[in-house]
Image 1 (cartoon, rainbow, N blue to C red):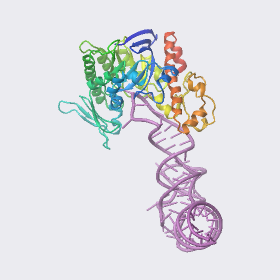
Image 2: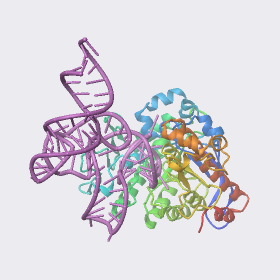
Image 3: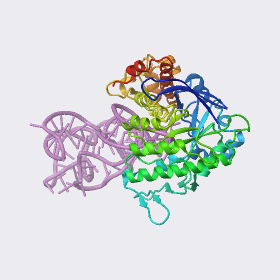
Image 4: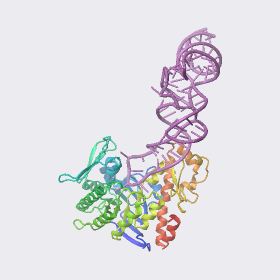
Length: 415
RNA sequence: GCGCAGGUGGCAGAGUGGUCAAUUGCAGUGGACUGUAAAUCCAUCGCCCUAUGGGCUCCGGGGGUUCAAAUCCCUCCCUGCGCA
């Protein structure tokens, strides 16, 4: 079980700076955690992520690694870190999110919500009959994105796989409902998440809280708070997950889940974090595409973030700019390097930036790589984008430690 | 020189009398991307305007047939292949 120590707090707010200790190293929080879904940070080597970007930990995905290459292979290799040559702490997401992301959206027409008989069952189906995920109280039936084969995930199964993969921090299997799902469904998903959380805790405990390799702190498990955009649900979920105990075990930290509308991030996080005890770390799942998301999260008590946006946007040609200044009124502090105006721009992506890419390459060159569809473009922009977010959060940490949060916030987010 | 095939929007390539300003792909232009089915997706892509509509120009050049032509006929130019 990890150790978490708070070093300093924001005066007015829930934010704090601390240290998470794991068997594979420490994470100075708040921290931005790059996503390595399939045991790779897309287009980057682990050395780039660690040395050039300065990331402290990475987050991989249970569902994707279960499908390919399979958790046994990762286990045999010595665990996720060994397998991918990542020399630092690691997380795995439980696969719960994939029931949401692979399932058809509520917006396209609510699936069948059957509350009949003894079992609550929700089947999300689609008009075009491409059902990728079905959820009931027991678990989730997935269709493989690789070959279409069916797979069944339960909370127990997810934990079992995550034990085999061997990340330092694993997440409970949860159900992520869309923010625009009706209240009654948000509640159902939340309650199901709670029931699943209990089963995850039991499964984690039944394995004897294994330390990968048998020694050390072992794997830690984070419970996930759901509840959508509703204050009552969020607070209830945080209280339930925060105090959950099964055979004497409780969660080692918490994830805050959901698919957030932009305006909901700050409120949802503050509701949840004000209910959770402050002694355990909190991870905001999937968030951190824009400066304001991170600043608001940190101020409201988030310790770690993960987000695919920096690497995905990089592959699509978008790069962060002006991270060290007030976000422009448009709030989109990024440029699209595929724009014609950059073909002749021989300045770096961000003149203020100290990343490898900005120190060595021009917008014009990267623009050319993008147009030529050369994969180095993804690498160079990914380095820059991740560096931007990782260091923004690092600077936020420094500001908290040095007692100048308000000042720091003021130069990054206009109120 | 003769024969055959062909010349369509930046490129490739459909269409072969009206529903064609012209399918589609690429390129171009702009946008989106938040626990990664994403090196993806969306929009736009002849010119002009009082713009969920209207006008103009357009399918190698010129001429013709027809109510109507990118589509049929004549002619010229050009390209490829074959024969001399």
